[in-house]
Each structure stands twice: as C-alpha cells, then as structure tokens.
Image (tube, rainbow, N blue to C red):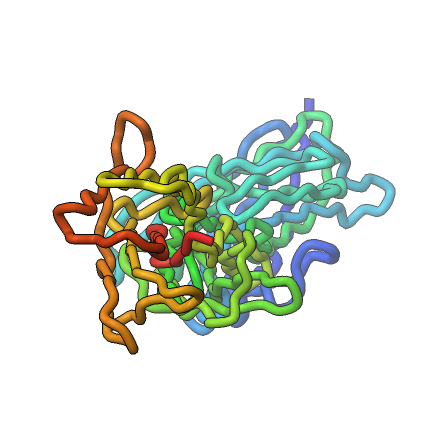
Length: 387
C-alpha cells in the first residue's frame, strides 16, 4: 500500500489581532522567522521549530498580559479542506537567559475545541474556533513567551487525511485583562467606631493587580463627594488619609477605595464612616428639686449610644442663687456667693450611674437656693449638658 505523504508549506510567522477578542494594540510587532518542518506521512508525527526574537516588540506588551499562540492549518486543495481532528498540535517552549544560557522548558497543549474557554491570569475568554485553528497555552493560561525563546511543535495528522499540500501559519498575541484589581480595606475595625468633624482618618487598603494603573478613595456625602488623599504604599498596602470637613453632618456615609488597571477594569471595597456630633445625654436622678438638709445626694444617668461616654469626663457644679441671678462663673459677683467649680464624679459600677454626696455642713453652705449643673463628654469630646 502506498503511503500518503503530506507536504506542509512553510509560511512566515505573522501577527494579527483577533476580531472580538483583541485589537491591533495587542499585537507583538517586528517578528519574523520561518517554521522549519519537513514532509511526513499521514498518521505520523512531525516535529517543527521556530523562535521569536522580538526585541522591538517587547515594549508593546507593557502590561505583561498572557501570551497565546494560534496555529492555522489550511489545505491548498479547496475540495479537501481541513476539518476537526485532521491534525493535532502540542509543543513546548525552551526559555533561555541572556547569552544563550538554558533556563527551563514550558510545555503547552493546543486545542481546536469549539467553543473554547481559556482561563488565564488576568481573565477568562471563550472563543469560537474555526476548522484548522488551534489555540495553544499551558495550564496556567500563559505561555510566558520572552525574547530569544524557541518553540518546538509536535504535529500529528489523521491517517485518513487526504494527501496533499497544507499551509501552516503561526500567530502570537496577548489576551485582554478582564479581571478588576483586588481591593481590600484591611483596617475596617477602625471604622467600627465613630468620628466627628476635623477627625483625621486613615484608610489602609491592600491593592493587587499586575497591570495596576491608578487608585483613589472617596467618601460619599448626600450631595457631594470627598476625596481621600493618598499618603504612601508599603508592601502592597496603600494608605489614604483625610481630615474631615468642619461642616460634615452627623450620619453614616459610604467610604470606598477604588483601583483601575490599564484595561479599564475597576475593583473596589467599601466600609461605613460613622459621624457623631452629639454629646452624651444627662439625666439627673438626684437632686430632684426637693428641699435638702445636711446631705445632698448626687446621682446622674449619663448615656451616649454612639461614640460612648468618656467616664472620666462627668462633672457637676453647684452655684448659689439670688432670685433669678446665679453666682457667676468666676464666683465673684455683685454679692458674696458660693460657686463649687466643676467637680469630677465617678461611675458607680454597681448602679451604672454617677454618684456622690455633698455635705453642706462641711463646705459651709447656708440656707438658700442653689443652681445645679452637670456636663459630660463622649469619647470624641462631644459635650453634653444637663438640660
């Protein structure tokens, strides 16, 4: 039986974009070489080799996107075109360092399945594959092609393939990045507490993307936005700061950090910025306005549902009255009057209220009317006054 001999016509390697997948800006330019392959018998496997030495083209792929090879096998006899399973192609890349020193081998497989989904480091793409077309990549979806690399192919034909001449061409391009940058605000615990006007906040965000272009942070108010100020980056952590405006209203606001890559993909993460501008609420349990003799009991309920009460900030004051007049702040007025000054009062853990007693005999209070006041601050220094 006469063996069927196939002739693969050598064609120059050329580069084109793929409609609907990549554009001209994703071609590697200034590449030319010949595919070295000899005739072989149908059903056998032939070896082929070529290389890319694209010194001028390296700058084209400035964002380090994954490389993919595409091989096209076509018949010169229009009556016997190439169908699925007429050929199979696999191969390897030999990586060399500068001065020709061997570094490593990168095996790859080629598929003519249709539709074909390629997962790669910066995305995923699904293609309709025509007859005679093979897409080649490694399990990671990236051939890591570099200048001076050599490519070796194993091309196997179907034993039933029509004998004739076939053209083989190779194309190289890099895939689009469809994955947004990874953004993660790592100090969200800092935003489990409240802030107020003029607070200096810091946002720490982990941002990762092989093609990172820009990053920014924004606070979304009711009718405007506030931009965070980028401070610095350390070990992939990006620091943003902002002194909050003096007129910021008490409310919960959305705070987001964004990052964009060179392909326009935008990633984000968010947290809630809580603003508290209200001081503690003070309720006098005692005194209640009754008449007291030697001992005046003091008991205050102080609450703050947002930032929380600063337990060291609760004070009371007793000032003598003369009709509608109250002893001045300084204790010096038109008459000799009593002003205790602000006296700190501590929390009674048992009762949950702030308690003390005034011994009127010890401090020499005379019969009369006295103005009782109290004040307290929350952990943000917002002050509340007994109404």
